[in-house]
Length: 457
Image (cartoon, rainbow, N blue to C red; front, side, top):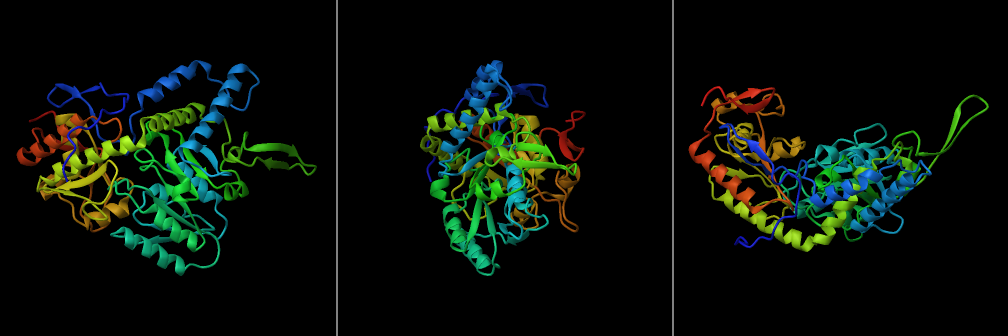
């Protein structure tokens, strides 16, 4: 595959001109290649929030002008998100703290006796919330192709008992970046009477997400991965199970009326709709920031953003493939479609050591470890790490290993609409130099992390 040499300009993000110190004492422009953890805020989003900040007021609480303005802004943000996700009539948008919060909210709203199905390849946020009283969970083995994923779900649902069922699936892996066959899996789930929640934390920043087209029942994502700061997220989709459930948080805003009974108890009538699960004073700035990011991505055009990212992915994967010591991790095989997320190991290196050298010697920020997807990374690594024993002793993995298991960790590079080509060029140069020449500095373990030892060269 040939790499597009005319990649269009990135979107403007905060931090693009930040310089960081190297171990040598020099400073260099920071190459932020950890978008999968938290993407930098779009400058457009920051400007929108700054313009609103002087007019900040309480939401749904006050009669004053600023309170009314903030309430209108908050509810308009909800409508903007609904349009961004192409929701159906009757669907609702609940503002949460993040994807993890959204999926835990949904887990608490599931009818008693619901059986949940999820592949072991899920992020912990979509793997763990279902482990609670009244629910049962069936974890499916990691598939090695789209067809295998579809057939595995079909087989699991064929053997499921009668009653409510939910299938949870990621849109794009936070480890490999690979796209999952969401539409096909949803068709299978619905054919067997199961509902579907889509973890779009890694998908929404890179691809258009249409709830209508994918036919999922709910979608969850985080603002901090969608170029919006301030700790807000979204759970959007069908209202029936959410309206039938006890509020996620009990308190003001969720309650329609509260009254003392004759016996001294307190009777509560809860709201229906989004307010039912948004108790307390809502994060209006976080919601507005998400809405601003949705507008900015729509205006930039997902077709153009996706084309640009495909060119960057091709550049990165071809560059890494040219280094024999590097093994890129993949669940579905070489050539599978992915967003701007790539994980790999380097023969002869512990991944924590390698990542520390990228930061201290090149000013490049990546992530290493098991990426809150321990079962998936262990499957992809096959019980082996790339580290040589002496390097493993210098800088161990930040994540715990299973008894009898070697220290396992990988390196993840991730990028998006704000990433300049120069950052990937610098990254590939750095990987090549570290593999061929080794690190220029010595490193040691400190607090479970690998850090440069500035006391010696």
